[in-house]
Image (tube, rainbow, N blue to C red; front, side, top):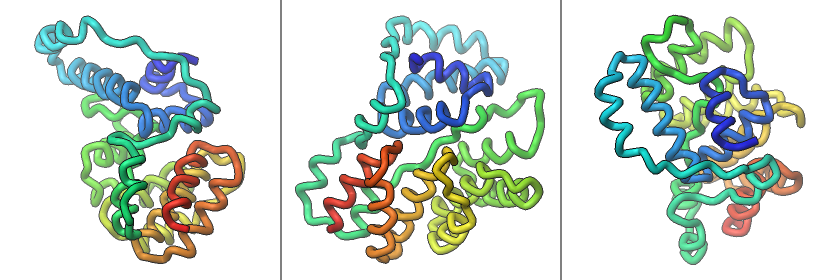
Length: 234
C-alpha cells in the first residue's frame, strides 16, 4: 500500500489495526511522510474552518509536492531512526536522562482525525482534539472517562501518553500496567516502548532494559529502536 493511501484511509476512519501501527511508525520515523501528513491535516482543517479562499493561495506553494514511495510493514521496522540522526548521539557518553530526551517522541494520534467543527460531536473527538492540541490535562480527563465507561485499549494508551506528557511517569507506568499486552494487540510494542522510557526517566535502568530486550527479540515496529537503545544502556 502506498503511503498516500494510508493518509486517505486515516482521514476516512478506515485504517485497520495493522495499518494503524504502520501509520504511527511512519509518522515517527519518516520525515517525508510526517511532512506530507501535516500538510494534508492543515488542508482539512482549513476547509473545515471555512477558509477555502485562503487555502487556495497556500496551495500554490505546494504545486511540486513529492510523491509518496511504497513502504510496507517489514520495511517500516527497518528504517526506524530519529530526525537529526541517532548516530551522533551514540558517540556521546549518555546518561539515562539524556537518552530519554533523545529517544522520546510524542505518540501521534492514529485513531481518529481531529478537527473542531466536524458534525460528529463526541467524547472521542474531543479527547483527541485536546491531545493533538497539547492540552494534556484535558485529554487525560477525557481519555480516563472513556476508558472508565468503555474499557477500550486506545483510551488507556492515550491516557498513559497524556500522563507522560505531563511528566507523571509513575502514573503512566501504572496505566501501562493495566494493559493486556497480547501479541495480537496493535498497541503492545508501543506500550512496552513507552513504559521502558518511563522507567528510564525514573532512572530504573534494569526495568527499562528488560522491556527493551523483549522488544528486541521479536519483529515489531520498535524492534530496531529498542536494539539501538540497548547498545547504549548495556
